[in-house]
Image 1 (cartoon, rainbow, N blue to C red):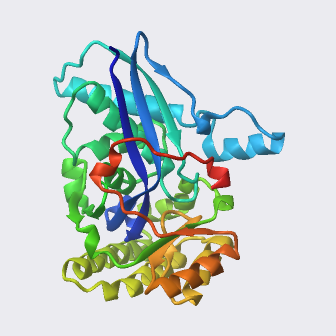
Image 2: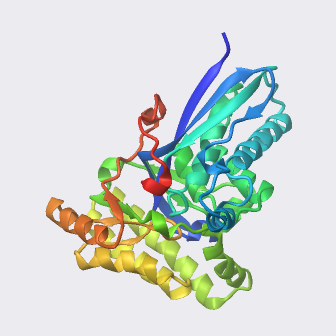
Image 3: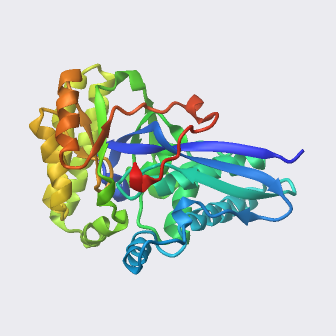
Length: 351
């Protein structure tokens, strides 16, 4: 019987500290199982990568073709599968791991809303790495696995990204991440601490699928200024990291009431150094008018924050719906959630 392996990775929300993960900072993130990627490897005579939705080559018009190419490039999700496979193979070779002599056909399904900062691309990568580990019966230390995914995207595909997304999609749950520079440079990873999801306050996620944009674009100028040692950017990255540290301390000491102010401070700081699009700022401000806290879940297009009770959540949901956003109470993903099938895969454009 041919070997068949199925794995899943989930959407993530950067709760505090982002975007400092790409700048030797600190962050808190959580994975949530409302959206995800399902990756299937089936033993086959040759290596084969099956196109998925992101690789669709059918378009409504030349305008849509141009827009999609600007957002996704020419290779969609298959490039991610190939890059992770290459890095996995190289890791095994470097570490003297002999792989079983068998090939696979890789297929993926994704229902994470695309390019709104919920980490669909890294979910494809992490699901692929999990599948390769199981298919070839290889154990890679959990703290090392996110680095393989990061290198696949950053080194192989020249995608501007940081550690955070790959860490939370390998670990699941809620994780505090410390990317202190000397440790990262010595170990090629950060320090990762699990936080009990039961300590989290009431959180929501809201997104606007029409806001799709390539996240790397938002970071280019800030990256340039950071590398040029711009004082304002360096100071902001230190402050982002401190916000995450304060959030971690508040959670583990049982003081979640401190988190809303930290969430709001995180966005205000970002707004001071990034060129935030008015449509994205409007999402945050609309949420805040209801009394909820709000910040970007990633680089724009989706927000995350806290709310007090069901009454406030209902007001939040109504207000965001009026500007075209879908809001949900995310189900924080646990490792056990990776088993089985994802029931529904609506196309991201219609999510």
